[in-house]
Length: 155
Image 1 (cartoon, rainbow, N blue to C red):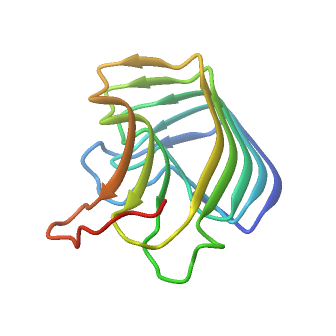
Image 2: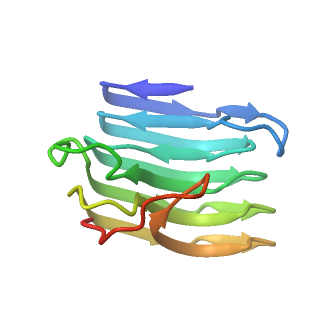
Image 3: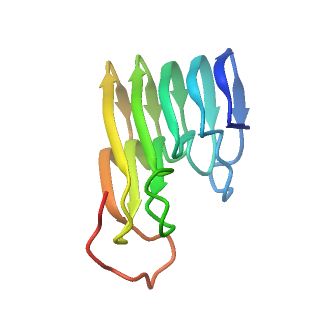
């Protein structure tokens, strides 16, 4: 499910299911959107349960069960040159969520590039983690398919 270029979205009681080994199956992808609330939902995928992309602000996630999957991710950011105005995520709140059997809990992922961007004003609270490989991860050298150019990162 993709929310792109939207404002004032309320999503409640969403159920998203995909096999844990299925690739590119983001549950909910939010990009270029403002004032989005996802509450009381169950998401299990082979990719991000929720992915929050650039040009997004005022995003609220609460009472979401995530698993299997890659958790709730901000990004990936910093992939394209001259995109610093678009690679901005601000004002994200994730609260009262449960992650079970996921590779990641909450994560920020950016490519190892010199391209600038900004992630700020994040709040993660009352997060429950069960059998999570990386509970909290900030990956500034995201590279899903090596080899990748490893340069000084800018986000």
